[in-house]
Image (cartoon, rainbow, N blue to C red):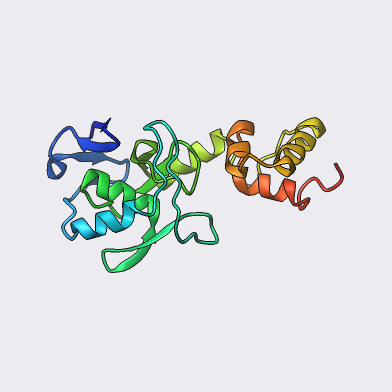
Length: 184
C-alpha cells in the first residue's frame, strides 16, 4: 500500500479493502476500520503534541512501563502508536503484523513515522540499529561521559540521545543512572 503524508495525515493511495500485504507465511488483507467515531479521534489526537510532519509527535497521556503510550480504543487498552496507525489509515492491523517506528521513539504517534512489518522485520530493524539486548555495545568512555554530562545539564531527552548515538533509549537510561558502565 502506498501511503502519503498530506497535511499531517496519511491517506491510502488505494481502497484499504483492496490492499494485499505479502508475507512469507501467508497473504494478509487490511480490513477497513469499522468502529471509529469522531469523538474517538478527537480524544486521541488531543493527547498528542503535534509538530511538523518530519518531527516526532510525542504521546502526552498514559505511558506503559515499556515506554509506549496507551489509549482505550475499540473496547480495549491499546498502544497509542497502533491506534495512530489505525486512525490515519482507517484500517485494522492484521494479527501477524506489528506497527513499527522509523524513528525508534516509543512515544511517537506521528503516522509518517509508522509502518507495518512482521515481527521478524522489526527484529531485523532493531538489530541493524543496535537496539537488541545482548548485542555488544560499542560506546567509548568519552561517549558515555558525554551522554551523562549532556543529560545532567538538561535540555535533552533520553530518546534524543538514543537517536544520536543509535542505541536504545533504555540503554541511555541505564547509562545515565549508572546501571550500565558504572566504572566509567
